[in-house]
Image 1 (cartoon, helix red, strand yellow):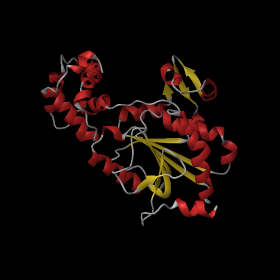
Image 2 (cartoon, helix red, strand yellow):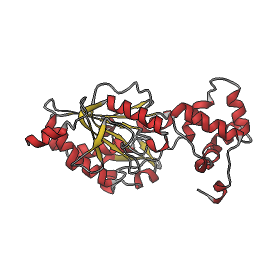
Image 3 (tube, one colour):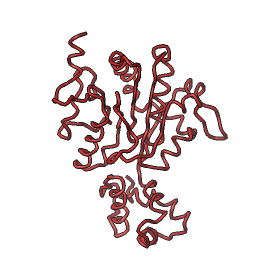
Length: 291
């Protein structure tokens, strides 16, 4: 946070905008993060000719559902993402979680859900990993779903177009040259990878897109901005779509402890969580004992 940001306090306008973000997305903008409001909304103020936040709020309040509302909410959301973010996580997925999932799925179908996928780098990173290990997955149907509440983030993910800065963050040069082609100053991901991922706009508190169960759910660095009550609601939704014995990955600063009884820390794979069965047991344990 900037020095100027430390002196910012909630005004009438910032309170309205923070309330709008929370009501639409569940994200809470704490007082030490309110400096983001003016910074994030400056482009909207300039584009629409508003002199300040108060004028923008007055416009939003003039109608119960103003077209600017979605634009404002999208701008206030934190869409931080990068390719292969936390590389050790992707190594664990490739070397440990996916082999375990593969051994448990005689129907040769793997379903993965990136919940809160932002602009798509995480989902595309998984697609790249599957293509690198293509020989192991011959004859399998791989389904990767990416959802996010931000319509702007999902539009970017669907386009598959990333800036030079985006591809420099976490993406090996070999992957860049193999899976991307230059488009002006940007880079476009290959159709082969784009076809592996289905991106949809959706709300974690009332998801409509996910159907059935997923073997692996990634919901990383999403819950940090929610209240305990909201986090519990999200865990309920994730549990509803997690296959018994399926895996859940959260961000480094997130945990299920004290927030849900549907997932427990994995005994084998550090940093991952396993879905309990209906009796609250570790359903993966019998599989491990039988091996």
